[in-house]
Length: 133
Image 1 (cartoon, rainbow, N blue to C red):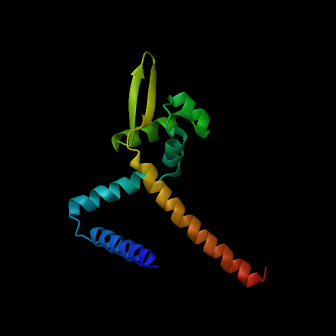
Image 2: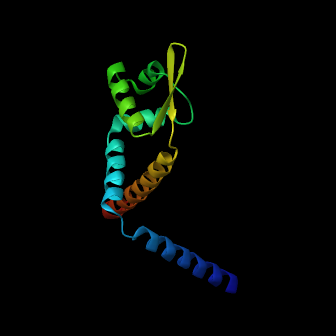
Protein backbone atom coordinates (compact mmCIF):
# COMPACT_ATOMS: atom_id res chain seq x y z
CA UNK A 1 0.00 0.00 0.00
CA UNK A 2 2.82 2.42 0.86
CA UNK A 3 4.48 1.65 -2.49
CA UNK A 4 1.27 2.47 -4.35
CA UNK A 5 0.88 5.72 -2.39
CA UNK A 6 4.50 6.68 -3.08
CA UNK A 7 4.07 5.89 -6.77
CA UNK A 8 0.88 7.94 -6.95
CA UNK A 9 2.61 10.87 -5.23
CA UNK A 10 5.56 10.63 -7.61
CA UNK A 11 3.18 10.60 -10.60
CA UNK A 12 1.42 13.73 -9.30
CA UNK A 13 4.77 15.46 -8.78
CA UNK A 14 5.89 14.61 -12.32
CA UNK A 15 2.61 15.89 -13.77
CA UNK A 16 2.88 19.11 -11.75
CA UNK A 17 6.43 19.65 -13.03
CA UNK A 18 5.34 19.05 -16.62
CA UNK A 19 2.44 21.46 -16.14
CA UNK A 20 4.79 24.17 -14.88
CA UNK A 21 7.02 23.67 -17.92
CA UNK A 22 4.03 23.95 -20.23
CA UNK A 23 2.95 27.24 -18.67
CA UNK A 24 6.30 29.00 -18.99
CA UNK A 25 6.35 32.31 -20.82
CA UNK A 26 6.98 31.99 -24.55
CA UNK A 27 8.50 34.78 -26.58
CA UNK A 28 6.63 36.25 -29.51
CA UNK A 29 9.17 34.63 -31.82
CA UNK A 30 8.58 31.22 -30.25
CA UNK A 31 4.81 31.63 -30.50
CA UNK A 32 5.10 32.54 -34.19
CA UNK A 33 7.28 29.48 -34.88
CA UNK A 34 4.78 27.23 -33.10
CA UNK A 35 1.86 28.77 -35.01
CA UNK A 36 3.73 28.34 -38.30
CA UNK A 37 4.26 24.63 -37.57
CA UNK A 38 0.55 24.19 -36.85
CA UNK A 39 -0.36 26.06 -40.05
CA UNK A 40 1.75 23.62 -42.07
CA UNK A 41 0.02 20.69 -40.39
CA UNK A 42 -3.46 22.19 -40.76
CA UNK A 43 -3.87 20.85 -44.31
CA UNK A 44 -5.28 17.31 -44.64
CA UNK A 45 -3.27 16.57 -47.80
CA UNK A 46 0.00 17.33 -46.02
CA UNK A 47 -1.03 15.00 -43.19
CA UNK A 48 -1.92 12.36 -45.78
CA UNK A 49 1.55 12.72 -47.35
CA UNK A 50 3.29 12.43 -43.97
CA UNK A 51 1.19 9.38 -43.15
CA UNK A 52 2.04 7.78 -46.49
CA UNK A 53 5.73 8.41 -45.96
CA UNK A 54 5.71 6.93 -42.47
CA UNK A 55 9.16 5.40 -42.10
CA UNK A 56 9.75 4.92 -45.85
CA UNK A 57 11.20 6.99 -48.65
CA UNK A 58 8.94 7.60 -51.63
CA UNK A 59 9.09 9.39 -54.95
CA UNK A 60 6.45 11.90 -56.01
CA UNK A 61 4.96 9.25 -58.31
CA UNK A 62 4.68 6.80 -55.42
CA UNK A 63 3.10 9.50 -53.25
CA UNK A 64 0.63 10.34 -56.01
CA UNK A 65 -0.43 6.69 -56.05
CA UNK A 66 -0.53 6.43 -52.25
CA UNK A 67 -2.61 9.59 -51.76
CA UNK A 68 -4.77 9.41 -54.90
CA UNK A 69 -3.97 13.08 -55.53
CA UNK A 70 -2.63 14.83 -58.59
CA UNK A 71 1.09 15.21 -59.20
CA UNK A 72 1.00 19.02 -59.07
CA UNK A 73 -0.94 18.94 -55.79
CA UNK A 74 1.47 16.47 -54.16
CA UNK A 75 4.49 18.44 -55.39
CA UNK A 76 3.07 21.69 -54.01
CA UNK A 77 2.49 20.17 -50.57
CA UNK A 78 5.88 18.43 -50.56
CA UNK A 79 7.52 21.81 -51.20
CA UNK A 80 5.72 23.31 -48.21
CA UNK A 81 6.65 20.34 -46.01
CA UNK A 82 10.26 20.63 -47.16
CA UNK A 83 10.31 24.39 -46.46
CA UNK A 84 9.08 23.61 -42.93
CA UNK A 85 11.82 20.95 -42.68
CA UNK A 86 9.28 18.23 -41.96
CA UNK A 87 10.42 16.26 -45.01
CA UNK A 88 13.81 15.92 -46.66
CA UNK A 89 14.70 15.07 -50.26
CA UNK A 90 17.37 12.85 -51.70
CA UNK A 91 18.18 12.74 -55.39
CA UNK A 92 19.24 9.43 -56.91
CA UNK A 93 19.72 9.65 -60.66
CA UNK A 94 16.46 10.89 -62.15
CA UNK A 95 14.45 10.13 -59.01
CA UNK A 96 13.93 12.35 -55.98
CA UNK A 97 13.06 10.50 -52.80
CA UNK A 98 11.21 12.13 -49.92
CA UNK A 99 11.28 11.03 -46.29
CA UNK A 100 10.07 12.41 -42.98
CA UNK A 101 12.87 14.56 -41.57
CA UNK A 102 11.27 15.46 -38.24
CA UNK A 103 9.68 12.39 -36.71
CA UNK A 104 8.40 14.38 -33.73
CA UNK A 105 5.49 15.23 -36.02
CA UNK A 106 4.24 11.69 -35.39
CA UNK A 107 4.31 12.28 -31.62
CA UNK A 108 2.15 15.34 -32.14
CA UNK A 109 -0.25 13.43 -34.37
CA UNK A 110 -0.43 10.59 -31.83
CA UNK A 111 -1.27 13.07 -29.06
CA UNK A 112 -4.01 14.67 -31.16
CA UNK A 113 -5.44 11.29 -32.23
CA UNK A 114 -5.43 10.05 -28.63
CA UNK A 115 -7.23 13.15 -27.43
CA UNK A 116 -9.79 12.94 -30.25
CA UNK A 117 -10.31 9.23 -29.57
CA UNK A 118 -11.03 9.91 -25.90
CA UNK A 119 -13.43 12.71 -26.78
CA UNK A 120 -15.26 10.62 -29.38
CA UNK A 121 -15.51 7.68 -26.96
CA UNK A 122 -17.02 9.98 -24.32
CA UNK A 123 -19.50 11.35 -26.86
CA UNK A 124 -20.36 7.82 -27.98
CA UNK A 125 -20.97 6.78 -24.36
CA UNK A 126 -23.15 9.86 -23.78
CA UNK A 127 -25.25 9.14 -26.86
CA UNK A 128 -25.55 5.46 -25.95
CA UNK A 129 -26.60 6.42 -22.41
CA UNK A 130 -29.10 8.96 -23.75
CA UNK A 131 -30.68 6.47 -26.16
CA UNK A 132 -30.87 3.81 -23.44
CA UNK A 133 -28.74 1.23 -25.26
